[in-house]
Length: 265
Image (cartoon, rainbow, N blue to C red; front, top):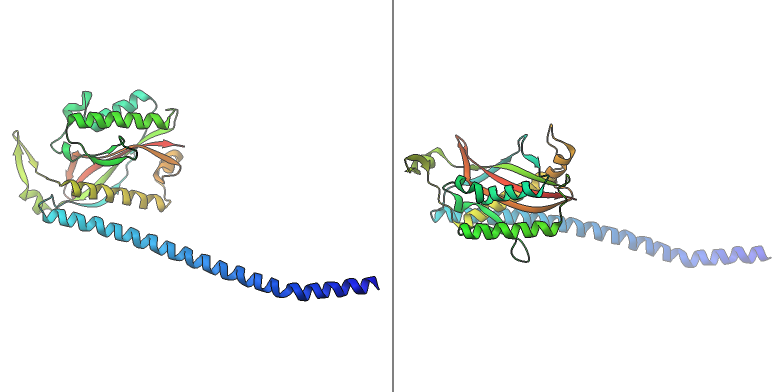
């Protein structure tokens, strides 16, 4: 008799809870569909935002060129075998910063486009990127960079690397001929950039660099740590600059350097 009552109770409980289980399962499925839809919508929005950001940058460049800024566009990025170097001491890092800012023993190498270089300015709460107004401004920005790096507490025991990448900027042969001039007896190409144009070129470099990292590719004949940096995995940016004053010219356009000091976590 006890067994009969027990079985009857099981049947009653099953009949009572089964609809709840069905409803709960259906709710889980609907929630899963909702989350999947939300994820796809967010992914689509991120892609649209990214495309709109790129369009904004391109519109800015075209607008500045129409105002008289140099008719230069970002075309791509090239990595070479010597793109990565270990920075194994504070002294070497200080020399690198002197080189980037063209101060100290490197003051004499500053080219005609020195005022077009874009530097990370770490003086505020959040780093910004801008051109330097004067030699004093460059020295002040270098001091701010050193303080910023000190806060990150690098050990210089295999955790700091510098990445030097060539960014390709296009300039037609016709424009090169139109802008040829002589400065101090030397033939050169006069390129005048607006600040907005420089900021837009810098943003294009950053966007392209991040896109390369998202592809999760690798560089041939490079160490694992270099490929990790290439993919931007577990890194902190200690310093960054886009150097136009030492640009190299070729038939397809010009090369400028995007240099970044990374802290590997």
